[in-house]
Image 1: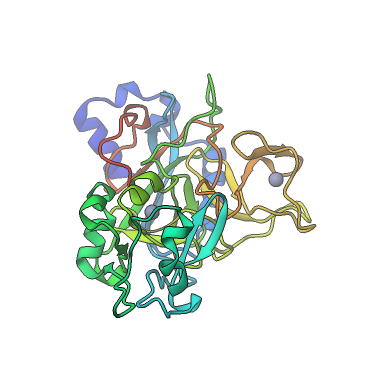
Image 2 (image 1 turned 90 degrees about the horizontal axis):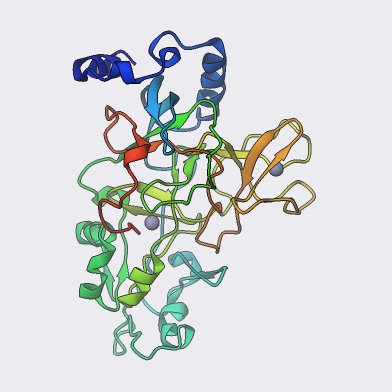
Length: 339
Ligand SMILES: [Zn+2]
Ligand SMILES: [Zn+2]
């Protein structure tokens, strides 16, 4: 925390912060901070989580949790993603999604792509050998980081594994300790904001840009856990397939907690213990229940949309742990959407 404030003083902007944020944090902040940090004990946390001053997407200046994690799951392996040949089984490939459903990317799936998408231009394997056309290794990570390059890799299965990235990716999440309900409308989920942080330190990411990926007749398969890898976010989830750790809800029978959203509300799994999704979810897939307060429930794994929108003002997910979060100026997309 000290470093952040000294940067603020050096910039001469500390006067812009509310006095409550610039002075000592209140005890509510500390107890909420401790509660949230305890949720992430299954993550690989880098350094110490801290309380920092932050500016949320709606311009509110407040105090945030800042926590940095290694962008890789601590409780499961990653991959496989692309099968080697059209003879490969479901265990040798990952998954893909279409119209809300999840499909195994096995050899037969690759063989049938033209039928699946009703488009003769799909041909992702060598008809003579049955070998799947893939871009992998370091090059795969480069392509995974820039989906606009997909048209140069027409009809390839794109795969990035953690060991081929030039360095270990960490992400810093700056999330309000007390959620601030957005004033005018629910906040849209932007391509770079992410949705939140899973309890194993992995990002719940914004929807994958399927139009860019499919437009170039490429696939960037997810593994069976609904995640894949790019150099910006490391390993990240686009769907919740039940692989991330869960903490029981305080309310018996209610779906457990699986993460923290970028607006500070908790993310719960999809189904309550009766096997049903709550029937009173709003457009953001949230609701307010006794004993839990407002929280989200994730959607099914094939939706490419983990939650619907944000009810609260969001903080920041950052590649630089020392960057000060001002989410109110991060509106414009600084680059293409990332797969
Ligand atoms: Zn609920
Ligand atoms: Zn992705």
